[in-house]
Amino acid sequence: MSISAEDHAAAGDERSWRGGAAAIALLTFAVDAETPVLAAGRRYAEHAMAMSHQAYDLRKGLPRLLGILDEFGIKATFFVPGLVAERWPEPVTRIAERGHEIAHHSYSHRPSTGLRPSEERMEFERGLEALDRLGIRPSGYRSPMWAATWRSAGLAREFGLSYDTSLMDDDTPYVIETEHGPLVELPAHWSLDDWEQYAYLPEPHLGYVIEPPDKALALWTAELDGMREWGGLFQLTAHSFLSGRPGRARNLRTLIETVLDRGDVEFRTGEQLCSAVLADRTLDSRKLEPVQADPEIYPHW
Image (tube, rainbow, N blue to C red; front, side, top):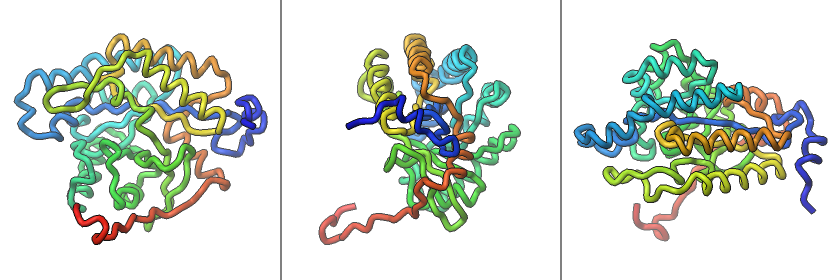
């Protein structure tokens, strides 16, 4: 027999990471600008359409999404690559001035799984330095394309970050034990990413289809209600060059209204949620255990 959302809320321990809520909603936005396209190859800097497609992020999408968040008085978490902070310092600064959290999202948006260890370390260092020049000292980290390595969690903690949101093995937060101390993991999933619904660019090829906003809303609402039933983390990942488009921005407004109408879900930033997780001693604490693949069974890289 399933437990209703009302029963979950009534039974909620305010000392838990959820407080008395049936679920927690974490709205996250990746402000990637040109970096995902450039990560596919430096030659795309010569493609005016591709560069303008990504510049929409800061020129139109970001201001529109910030306005919607202001309508509801909701604070969100924005993941910003260091290169974006360098190229677009004024819009990035405005995010912080509006009271939102800014988190670390590498320097160049190159997937960490394709980098040498020294290069991944450089991505942490250079990205943090770029944010620091704007007076921003992040608490959280997300690997580009969620392409974390087995090194990523330890590096995040080594560089003074408190939480990560790159892994997908749970739908409630937990703590990763690293050689540099505990790191809170706020697990995500592709089903709550607008990239899978909206991204399309023929060259470089960044997506296959453009889905209608109603389809995305139906998927996300189903996940929201599932998280309410099982007491999970509803973490939406949106991109301002995607969800900042007019019809999709209206869809985001409808999603926020849906969350509020449920009456038993609370909004948090990543930083707020991290503090609640560390205070909840009932959550899992685990080490990351790399998978060892037998070369006789899996001979190819």
